[in-house]
Amino acid sequence: MNNKILIVDDTKSWLMFHTKLIEQLYGDIFDLTTASSAKEALRKIKFNRPNPYSLIITDLQMEMDYDPMTAGEWLVGNIQKIREYSSSSIIIISSMYNIEEIAKKYNVNCVSKNMLSSNKLLMKYMLEKLMPFLDKVQNGSI
Image 1 (cartoon, one colour):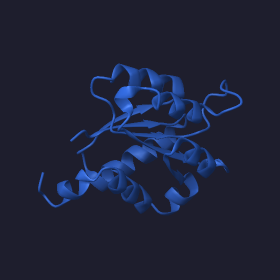
Image 2 (image 1 turned 120 degrees about the horizontal axis):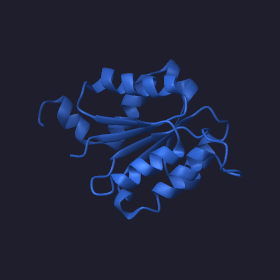
Image 3 (image 1 turned 45 degrees about the horizontal axis):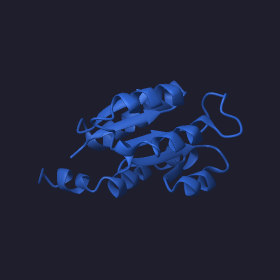
Image 4 (image 1 turned 135 degrees about the vertical axis):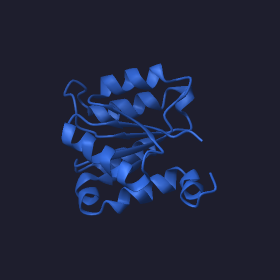
């Protein structure tokens, strides 16, 4: 069971929101790491190749030097090129209008920041969908 999650967002309040929400839902069962840019996230991802993150949660709009795509889209595309991350899950959490289109393009999951902030159980739903071992953890089997 790999319990490593990388959370990527350039806004400190959103990094804290995601971190605190996951901790409220699951306590300390996850090894949470944060990055405040796509470049920083990719460095951490490459460094952790021997023991990859099982889940990467990323914003789309961060650094501005990736035109015509967003930094988050650039990051997702690069993660998918790394063989060690082929079984890692990705969730895009953003306020961008085309979040679903981008998620579909890369075959990843997405949640609107507006929806998540009004219904925090969406995070629980997404994590349990992508990390089936959580059911065993919550039932005390692990």
